[in-house]
Structures are given as structure tokens and as C-alpha cells.
Amino acid sequence: MHRGKTLEEKLFYLKKYLTFWDMLTVQQRELLIRNTAAASYFKGETIYSAEHECVGILILQHGEIRTYILSEEGREVTLFRLGAGEICVLSASCILKSITFDVHIEAEQDSEILVLNSAVFSRLMEDNTHAELFALRLAAEKFSEVMWAMEQILFLNFDARLAIFLLDETAKTGENTLQLTHEQIARYIGSAREVVTRMLHYFVDEGAVALTRGRVTVLDKKYLQAIAAQPAKQ
Image 1 (cartoon, rainbow, N blue to C red):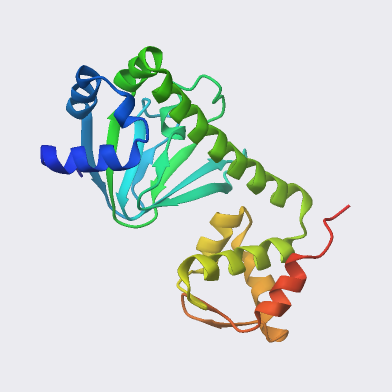
Image 2: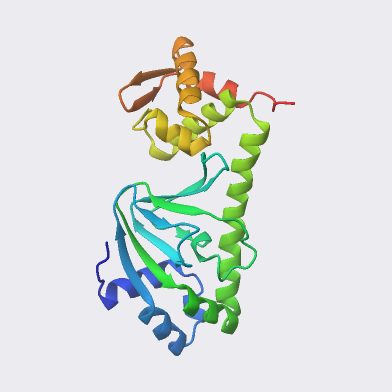
């Protein structure tokens, strides 16, 4: 679902989040403004997938989006999630030639996004070194998160992965009660719902968490921290 934004609104967000804005010429700024569109997505709606054309750079104004890959068996492996004020460059694989794998992006919450046209941004990268460095830096940061996600799946025991996830979520939200279903957690950490459920019930038996419908409450962070710190699997 799309809706328009005033020139002042677009200009505010572009100046705020594009750190190279002051390094652009007047003509380049005007070109970027004209080729930035506003888009709204409902929770669960697909923003980008391998079947779609290159979307462009995404600036998330409100909401939350998730970037993930699909295994051959159809299992989702979440690479990272982005919140308000963050920027996604993996949706612009056509202008970042180093991206050679297919990613999918969906709205985790109702979200409002500014979309910077991929062809225009590609031309901007060719003409302005600061814009190119900005995009490459963002890509490098996100690939670091991708590598961390892959390292967890490959080298950490599942109980450690789940403990890390729960601790990270409480740190991010500032709440000990997380509004998450077992299915959501499974998508986020690249596992099966049944495996998540079994491990959560084990944590319940250990007094580390409590479960209610659609919620997980962390009761013993020290226990989870000890689980998270255990040696990687051999």
C-alpha cells in the first residue's frame, strides 16, 4: 500500500539518514528527492523477494522489517531485523554486485518506508564517492550480521542460540516479557517450531522462563547467560 509524502517530509528523512547528503551537489539532491517514494506495508506483507525486481535502498521510518533466506527445504533463516531509522541495502542487490544470494524481505509490523530508486542511486554512486562509500559501509555492516547469524547456526548448540536470542530481545525491548510465538522465534533463529517448543519447555523446567499464549517471560537471566556462554559445538 502506498501513499505520498510532502517534499518537506522526504527532505527531513533524507538529510537525517543519508550521512553523505552535504557532499551532494544541488542537482544530485534534487534528483534524489524526485526519485524517492513513500511506501506502506502491512504486517506479513512481502517487500522484496528473488522474484521481484531490484527495489532500491530502503529507509525504515516506522515499524519493523525482516530479511531472511530460504533453505532448499523451505525453512526460513533470519539474517537480521531492522527498526525505525535503519537502512536496508540488501534490497538493492542490482547496484551492489557483490550480493550474489537471494534474500527475502517482509514487514514484521505495519511499516512505513522511503524507497530510493535503485537506478538513480546507482548513478549517484558512480558520480559521487561519498554515496558509494555510504552504500558499501552499510553492506559491510549487514554482512557482519549475516555472518554472525550463520556462525550461530553452524557452531552453537541450539540451547545457546535460543538463550542468546531471548537475552538479545529483552535487551532490545527493555522488557522481560516478549510478545513472541514459538513460530516467530523459530523463524528468527532458523529452526523448527517443534524444536523451539521443546527447548522452551526445558527452560521452563529449569525456572529460566515462563510461557503463556503468544508470550515468553524471562525469569532467570543469569541461567540463560550461562547457557549462552557455553563452548561451541565440536
